[in-house]
Length: 176
Image 1 (cartoon, rainbow, N blue to C red):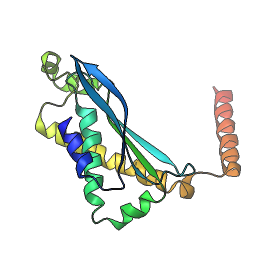
Image 2 (tube, rainbow, N blue to C red; image 1 turned 180 degrees about the horizontal axis):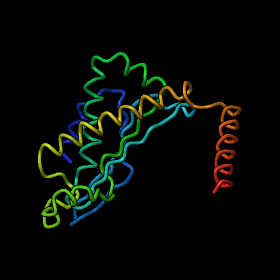
Image 3 (tube, rainbow, N blue to C red; image 1 turned 45 degrees about the horizontal axis):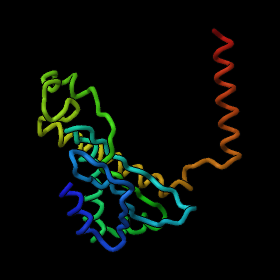
Image 4 (cartoon, one colour; image 1 turned 45 degrees about the vertical axis):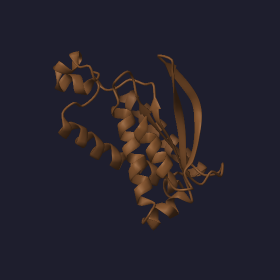
């Protein structure tokens, strides 16, 4: 929890932070933070980034925390990010209680017996690969939400696509 709180305390004034709830374990309270960046206007799109954390398994939380940290570092110099945040709201909940991926177990069955959890990439190069792949994907989601007016079909276009899809579906079913 210390790393996340350090990121929050070092964050810019535009970083909004609230505690959604507090979870108690072994007599100790742990805050569940909701961290937001960007324009809060209700007409703007929002993208939520929720990190899984279950037991000692921390990869989901780590991905979301590293992405948040990279955005905050970019805010110091990235004018494109500033313009993006004028049109979108990014919401982060780095610590939530969710499950992981069986892919790690399949690649390394010894992880079944690991104290750190079966869903964590224990080998450093796998952790770095997960971070590289996910950070690009998370960045894409924020950019896509910011530019939704350029790609989201109008009501008329959506009706046309729906009609095309139904036509293809039922025409294909008639041939079988």
